[in-house]
Every structure is written in structure tokens, then in C-alpha cells.
Length: 226
Image 1: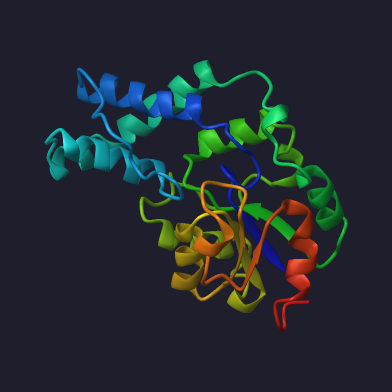
Image 2: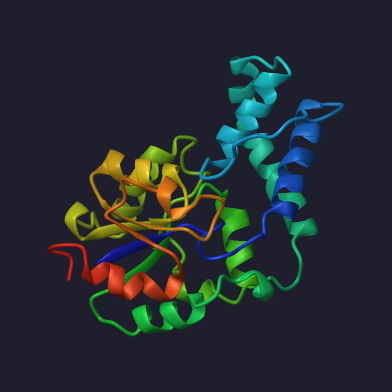
């Protein structure tokens, strides 16, 4: 089975501050913004390019200008995050995650990968500094840098895994957007209430759990998967 793990709120907890600041700095640099729009943005589960588009739209940057400079924003965000990312993110790893990844990686019927709205450069650096990078092979997974639309990411990840079948693919994430992207591609979903949403808010997943250590048992509850 192909397991597609979200990062923020799933593998890592409260590790987004410097990531957010890097995106903001990139928008200031590329679009010469004087300030970032105030107010709470519902960013959970969204891709970095979608977040950037929303912020730029709020200050009346045209869609054409956003599209024309999207690649520049991505490069600037990568550079900014490289400078800002803490040297060690291990204290942000969600409880039980290393043990579960060890257990799953030891199975010959499981392939571990990531599906995240982070730009790949950001995601890879987070995983490396959290001590989790060895579990997730380069050239696999799907990232915000692959598509602004998160609903397109499961298909991209499956294609990179050799056109892995939908019925043997599981998205594991912590937001309704993780569930929605799984449903858009017709794959399974395990929702974990370790991010900003409670279990009651995560209806629509195949299984909803409270902590990472429950993932192996949750996989066994999905008919036909194991």
C-alpha cells in the first residue's frame, strides 16, 4: 500500500512559524509588498501557492501578475526558509511518529511517501531537520510546488510511485482538505486529530484517529486494504 503523509499537523506539530515568515518575506521581496494583509487566514491544508495567491489577491495584485511571478515567489520562499529554518526540529515531531514510521517501514507491503501543501524545498528541509527524511524517498510524493490545487496531489504521488492503484493508496492528514483531496482522487483517507481540527470536524475520512500510534490499527480497519 502507498501511504501519503501530510507534514504539518500530522508528522510535525507547531513547526510552521518560520515557514509562514519565509512565505511572507518572499512576497515582500518579489511583489514589493509593504505589508502582509492582517487577519487570520485559514491556511491549514492549503498549498503554499494557494496561500500566496490569497494574500496577494487581498492587496489587489492581479491574477496575471501572480501567475507571472509564481516561480520567482517559490524560489524566494525556498531561499528564505533555508535561512530561517531551525537547525533541529526534532522536538516538533508528533508523539509516536518515529515508532510508527519504523513499524511501517519494516513492512514489505508498505511504501511511505508524503503529500503536503509545502513547497518541496520546504518539506524536505523540515523532514531532514526533524530526523524523518530517511523514511521518505526523493523523487516520490507530491508537494505544493507540483500544483497549487491540493486535489491534484494524490494523483501526482501515485504516478511517481509507478501509477500505484487508488484502492491501495491512503492519504494520512489532519484537515478537511486532506480528506477532500483524497476523495477527489478516489483514494482512502485516515484523518488524525493532532492538528487544528477536532475528530468531530474530520468526518468523511475512512477512519478518524486521535494519535499517530493508532495508524497501523486504522489501516487494518479499511476494507480490502490489508
